[in-house]
Image 1 (cartoon, rainbow, N blue to C red):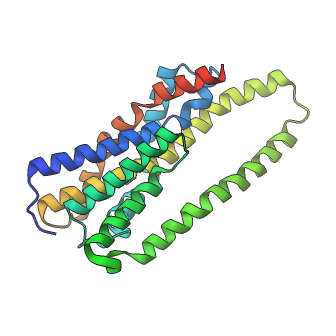
Image 2 (tube, rainbow, N blue to C red):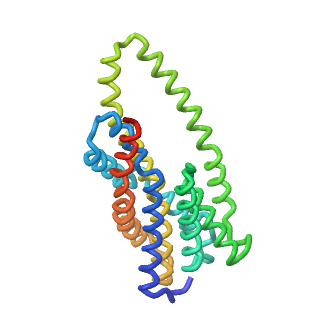
Image 3 (cartoon, rainbow, N blue to C red):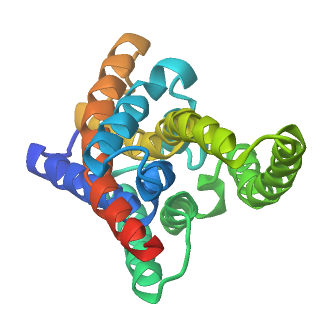
Length: 250
């Protein structure tokens, strides 16, 4: 990578990356607070604050592994340039808009990984792909819905048996509190995974601008600054999406 990327081009790439983050929030950012809002455990504005806090601190618990994978584990670092980043982001943005318009549930992660791999292959062919990283990511994409399905069945069975002798009011009081815990945990998971995709992309763009790979100390600073940028952008959609779901449930 060379240091020919101008500041205006860097700013444009970051803007496009945050636009992708915006659409990511449009798709799924409200999931973590939908239950606490629809059941009136929290008002939407308080639920947003609750989710935003746990999204923000997630990198302290989970580290920055997802950001590093997106930045260097899908396409070889020497292949990535401004054109590859722009192509990956625009491909993911177009897919998000299409699936949103058609009402199709879709993962922004899948779109970004596919866009990054496709843009890298168009520049340097199959040798651009880090097959070990892409293989693990593709396996996770396939296995995650199946594992989620099986774990949900198991948890429903456990909860049903655990509360079989409880009164409805006792169950309601217990689970209203537990919904706060589940929303916090979901937000931690979202911040530790989804929010880091854009972090990895922006970090790569900044490294192209500087013309060198970041050392660990500078990389940590870059990642922390991107946490602030991407989390603020992503959580702006929580309130509107949650209110829409609340109206539908009513």
